[in-house]
Structures are given as structure tokens and as C-alpha cells.
Image 1 (cartoon, one colour):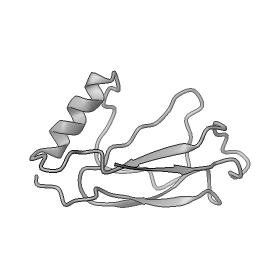
Image 2 (image 1 turned 90 degrees about the horizontal axis):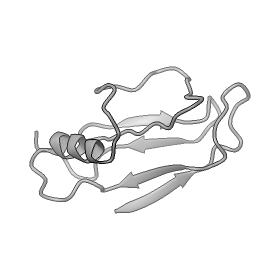
Image 3 (image 1 turned 90 degrees about the vertical axis):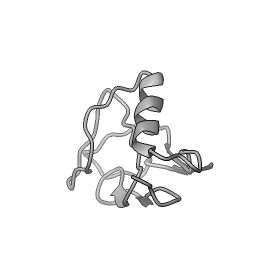
Amino acid sequence: MMIETLSLTDAVKGVPNNTLPVVIYRGVIPGGTVHPTVWLERHFAANGWPAQWCYGIYPFTHFHSNTHELLGVYAGQAQIQLGGETGPASVIKPLRPARI
């Protein structure tokens, strides 16, 4: 597993964020996992992280004023930009192809 952090301290005005960094865990789903969607759903549920929606990331700036956000990627990829229009961008994708 690889861990990456992104600082949002220089985020755009009007997009408040915590002073803590964004943490990206890459390679979390164990190799050989046949159903990565099921693995993610079970892992999230076991930690008390209820599923709210699946498939897709908002294409516009938004923020959560009183909660954290957790994303799990089992297939495909997306470029996310956090902290507003001048915030850091990162590509998120599984480290191995999904077997769905």
C-alpha cells in the first residue's frame, strides 16, 4: 500500500477545508480479490462508513462543512481536484485492473 497526502492550505477562498491533509491510500484492495466492489462495501461497512452513492464524482466545486468524505475506487479512473479551482489535482484509480 502507498500513502500520499495533499495539502489544502492554499485552497481558493470560499472553499473552506480542514487544516489536515487529504490522505490517499493506493493499493488498498488486496491482490487477487475477485470482487473488489464487495470487498470495498464490506470494508466500509465494518468501519461504520455507510454507502451514500456509487458511480461518479461531481464535476463542480463543492465541500462538506461538517463531515469527511471517503471514496473507494475499484475500476476506471478519475482526476479529482480538491480545495477549489487552484487546489491540487490527483488521478485516482485502482493499481490493478478490476475483475468484475
